[in-house]
Image (cartoon, rainbow, N blue to C red; front, side, top):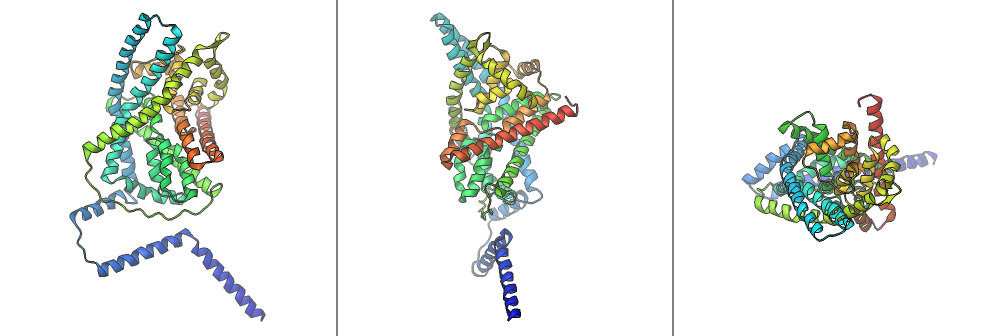
Length: 466
């Protein structure tokens, strides 16, 4: 009887081990793969079909674009090419728009003078509202008009699903869902829209992972800051096409770092607050097709660019007015704006930044697009968002404030990693219906941004590199 009981216990343990094995993701993958192989075998025996030229072309291209060896290098090259085109193509129209708005401002100011309007009204409406809004337009519109259509062409051609296929393996390893690569790609345009796009992920746990980590890819509101600082400081020793190439490489590096942080945070959350096993993701790859160039470009330029620009203007306009008010109301001999700068400066210096930069990010919570204009306003101490004629003037302003390449690098890192904008936070609350998860979405990137910039600043200073 004792031997019989021992045998039963051993059999039970063996069954328990088998049950545990059945719960592993690798076995589930084998089951799914076996089902597809069986289906393919049945199809081969019962269905007769001939491959068209398009099918053969798709298979040849997929062998390259989804290759474990070439897939990721091609992705990085595509990303670099998009940034190169965006940077190279946006500089001239941005300068032209800025010059036009400056010319128009002169006539608006003349009209205020002719009407004998009070100085405070001219300051609020022209130096605050008008300059803040036109800065956003001149900085944002040209890059968007290039970035969005380029991405849309890749999507129309059928390449973006291949990106999701390549990224699926990485997201699965960190406990996330392969579809998160699609929502992450949308975050390059707007993080607020990307939060809404997480609805394509069926699993609540994996959808929450996508929501909490989407902020680590730079949205369109941050492209202006990244592009300007990379051009001014990271490629300062180069000119012409080489300068654009170096700037593009730096931005690609920043983006890769953001994706790396996405993976790390996803892995940590999947092991702690959001434990679970990633669900299986089956992605049907569409055939490659020649994109309708004109329709795609027009639709992306007009619809997407216009929608994002209107959102930015609605937020930038009141932010410009508020900033002007803070800079022109004095308590004693110091403006409210400068009180904030002086309070934040000691802490900001430990991050490799300064009080102006940190206050600009705080006031820029409604929209990342207004961070750089607010920063310039503070540096120039005029109480208004001044325009600059060219990038050389802009760099001189930064250098006069004691900027080094470390300041530029840490501002880029802080811009990449810091808390989501106000619109994104509102969308996170609407999607999660939870103040807790909205706060988590705010505090995680904030802590990471502070930690990374502090570590970089202490390392660079400790090594004597600045």
